[in-house]
Image 1 (tube, rainbow, N blue to C red):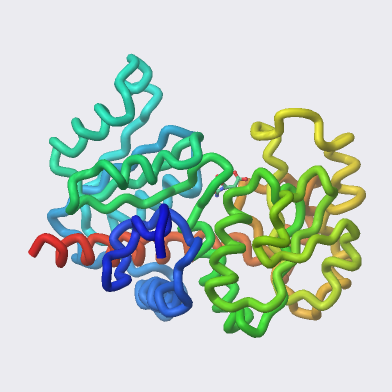
Image 2 (image 1 turned 60 degrees about the vertical axis):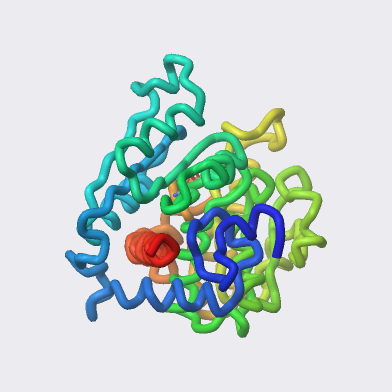
Length: 324
Ligand code: NCD
């Protein structure tokens, strides 16, 4: 392996950073998911406290807004007994003109062991991982429209829990795939897990041009795209990332692609409905589906804590073995 994907692995293939799901093997993803499951109690809730990161400092660097991701990283680090510093970048030196590199060097000097980075620029976590002191782990919590690997892992964990091995499943991703780092990372993760049938459903303006290359089939009609699928992943329309009007209106989108109980019937009985959040009711999803028995959207949030605990535990343990 070469390029950015190689930056996150040691020469033995262990995870030292998590920057992308692209190129991750089925064995490594399975190890991550198994570790995440080991952090769930018999009631399916993440364990309240484990001492794995006692004495370690986790720094959350959120250059872009977030609710779910930031909070669940925070909870995950606390559950592993780490000290957690969350930097509100709007009030930090970045807004006084300090470069990312200088901010980073100052944080390193405060003895950080792990950086969680969310940035509006694609590639920022790679930039950081390339430049940090060797024993510091970097986790990408979402960079531009590029990648969101912990979201993909929590999606895979949720899929595996409800529907079994993705190698036997059909998965459809609906809506604004083009601007979605969630979709991109999930597609790479599903490919890593050998999922044989990955579909993207949406108008041509919201589907990326490289779907063929990613091994994904494009559908413009939702009835065709949903036929026989086991998993439906809905996405928010990322209006903040659209450079021009790609849609007539939100109502039009709901009329053509919004997930309603009637449309759900095109999929396989018992199919699950997922969404990374934040959901927009009446745009990509109806109230009945969002609150219905097939939605696993809140389970995704819970699994997100366990997955983030697993990623932190595994990357820090690799980094520790590298220095010792
Ligand atoms: C997503 C994100 O920020 O990429 N949300 C999330 O992480 N929970 C998707 C979105 O903003 O629509």
